[in-house]
Length: 328
Image 1 (tube, rainbow, N blue to C red):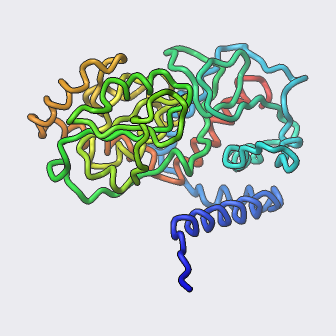
Image 2 (image 1 turned 90 degrees about the vertical axis):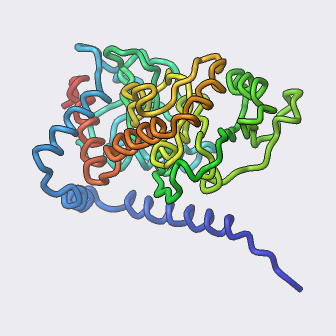
């Protein structure tokens, strides 16, 4: 009798086990020890690192002056506990916030909202994503669900070795803009596009096989269309030797999508996707310009690679949040 082993399931199960084991170990570590370990990890930051963290934290926590939270509906740090009894636990979000929130006094209070957020908050609130508004906002960005969103690659294939094609594989769930993109390009010879989830949308031809990240890297162009909030794949695409292709972003996260420069960090297409083929043909004919975009994208991604700086910036963002609402 033969036994088939699904290695992907085993790997996923191992990652899940490690996720809960490491995070619950952190959860039950006494605060005094945890704070000592945290500051030991951070170590002594350079003046340049301190300046970078200050600038980024001010970007993430840019709360209008004088805005306060509703303390009656706010959560105190002391009461921030793992939701064992709830069906939807948002475990990745919970632990990503716990790592930093427990560094502050237990009586501090705060608002937070987990999930894909695409509307602006009305009270100072910690979120994963927010609309790009270009002004002060009560929505404060945190680095949440980072094991899914902050994946960076080492791509060994050069841009010129790759296929002269664009690839897109997305979940499409009540997202008319993603459906419209497939309607336009599902059969185009320069595009290998489709959705990977079953859906009763009247378009069975949209359903295509799952393509791994590694297999995406065989294509010169990778589509990064926003979903319910940001385009999840944008970070790893910008760390590869393929080029991200997308309309100008409308939602931003810890990755600071609003600071990306069109046709410098990514190839910009119109929001109605009408110029996609024109842009693909241009960069196929001008590979040196595509390679310049890739180099700029790599430099941008490098800003987020230092674990020490990322952790200190997360801590400083929360500190600015508590200061802005009068807790600190």
